[in-house]
Length: 208
Length: 208
Image 1 (cartoon, each protein chain N blue to C red):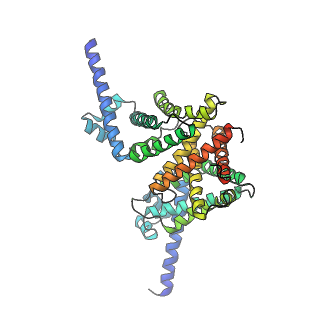
Image 2 (image 1 turned 90 degrees about the vertical axis):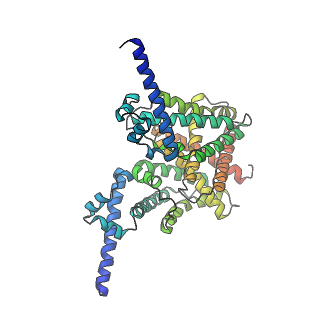
Image 3 (image 1 turned 30 degrees about the horizontal axis):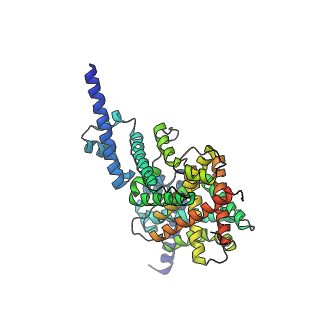
């Protein structure tokens, strides 16, 4: 195979990869992870079933590629909401943007949490990066509230706050523990942020 | 059919129901909801597949019966942890008991959140009662912290606090957003409770 042919082969593989991610993304957005079947993907992409496994290591990699795009869209939504103001307002704006994103893009958002790698399989570095970029959005308000903390402590706190907001959003949208009409969920999120922000202020004043 | 025969039939149905719930409970505890198959259940109970549907309205009812037992065990775990002391200590003790329960009984605990009724199907009253009994455990510390709130406001707040704790526990145990060794998760839960308790104290002092 000469060099031109090798390049053309690599181009075709890249093209097929992108096409499969596009189709998988649309499927997940419409039907969630449960709707994603390799056979249907291959049919929609007009390739053989086996070609999926030349383009991706396995179906998990394809799902993580779709989820990384969801993380990037979520990151953009948080950036759009980010208020360069008081830390509390910035945290509240991001929490509300998170809820809006989850409402608008529920199946894709849910896929971020439903997908599990096989036991022992490491999270690819490119996926961990996409996730960490998202959490880094909390860093500025936390640095403002708790100037004494180092970056590691802030990152741990960012994850704790994110998890708490996620819990209220996830159980509220699924109406898992009670009927939760949109207005009530908006209120619950407001209460959570108000309590956490007050706690962070007490913490920053070293009162707790 | 005379009365004795009718009684014997009802007894047999009750016996089969209990037996199926027992077997389903063991299956869920060992393999999670995904391991629950009607065919295997019938084989283990020594009954025909169709007999499951004379004992239960559908498989969802059987799963909710198993989940109601999990809720009762969780309620007992919270009661055992309940400290009749300062509200903050009581809330922290219950949050830690929740984490312990989730760790020890992970597949059964996870089944509480993984199971979804078909769209539009109402939650049976006996299941809603079991869930509400669980949340009522938060009522005493919240009444202590916020004596001015009525029962409805306290119930909404109990759900918000539970959801926040659940978010930290669920994402932490799944190591969904970062590696979360047990010690880190214990710390994260401690931080969340400290922040929320400080927020509740500010709220009770009408400072926020």
